Image (cartoon, rainbow over all chains, first blue to last red; front, side, top):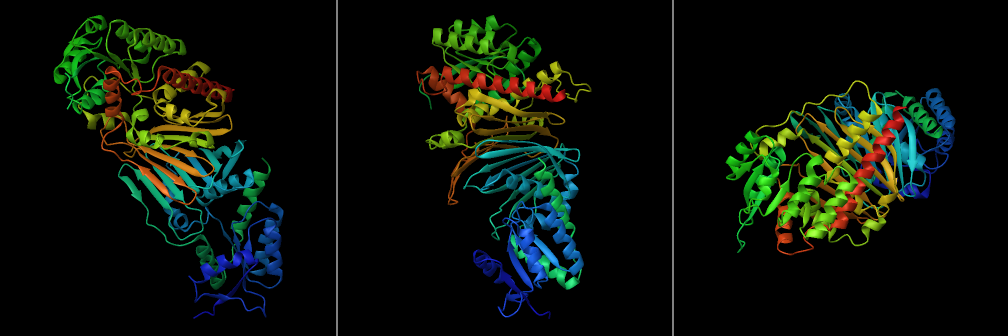
Length: 264
Length: 352
């Protein structure tokens, strides 16, 4: 059996989160021994996370897991992607919605059905300090579904933002509202013969999201996945390291999405 | 059981709304109402529908209004007839008018109906079934100041074509041709016509509920209005400091998603309505707070159609609170027209 990877939290605030996930993967990871550099570092996705991730790689870590990555300088993310390629390292993004394990498990099925739809709507409720962050969450979910959202308009009130754009030839409109109840992201993809409905939890727990596809045969609920966003990201990091196949493409896509939002 | 004799109902219009909504609903309320007369300009249709309902038929509104067995008139005709027919029924001394939505074709017509109701004392109830839905009414009674704290309101109506549910509700006869195709060239007049049709035909069901959460509804601003293929709308805007999204479309599969969502700082309201026509019980409404605690209202075994007719019965017997007031009805209509007008103008603007 492969030796467990050591993992450390970048900040004390992340330690509780690390402990919760570590308990679910006790044979694959172990708490970092302070006498050496951790092979895996959990980095907070706040502020200049890409810079801090670069620093951790420079300090000898082989894998970085970014918790809830937010808006940051896209050029630094590209530099991080370059570093990943050079060092054969791994950076995994643990995104609250786009990293949802139920969504990822059924991604291929959803992409196939999504092709038969013409409109994508998102309704999102949660706390967000900046409208860019709320926009990013929507753009990233669409991205995971294999589509690139081009935001063309954005309007806001004191507590909500509405985003309009195109996803290829599909119409897109999303509304994010600041609120503490019913937190999550709901996506509806509408087509004449198909309706997809995703209710993503976004709370970091292992409570499964709800994913349904309706067509002429009726509505089908896709199987639940009782796994947290963090655990799924750790598993991906482990798989990438064990296979030796590092992939910076996800980071470069993230940089593209951030650049698009930054240009609004 | 009601101790009094059932009220006789006369129907102005014998189309699918009368056949698939009101006649089956009255069958649930046989102690309160009985079909008395069916009027339609297509006398064969009137005759056929009336025969199966055990009612008389005519092709003349005047004849129906002079029929003493007709106590209540249900206006189920195309909307441009609503005002004249409702006012005529009130002036003929009928006991109540149930007018299908939209109430009228213009704001002036809506005011004329309200004025005639105030003058004659005849109550007018708009057949907005979601306003009367038991789950909505139960939720509404607990809302307190929540509407004042709403931050966003979202109505999403994603439904199969009507005939699917009409055919479960009854065996429709003389169904009008509902063929629809997206026009090739969009002109401002065509866009105006399409958006008014969509808002007054589909969005209208929930706009009175939406308005509940928009205290500044008169300040409505539409940011974006787009058509959805093959038949639908996608509208975004704000009223005061509240964001608003209205989406509606029809599709070719069988699932119905008729949702209303309201978000405040500390609560989320979600309502899933049952489809039109069928007696599938009430909506299910939930109120979730920041702790995750959820209160659910419904499903009740009766729907908004049954309750709107119960409101008609109560109004006839002097209950002035049984249905929304004339002021509320007129304001609801103003809001519907405002959404339709501003959305179509925005869509026309985007065309250029």
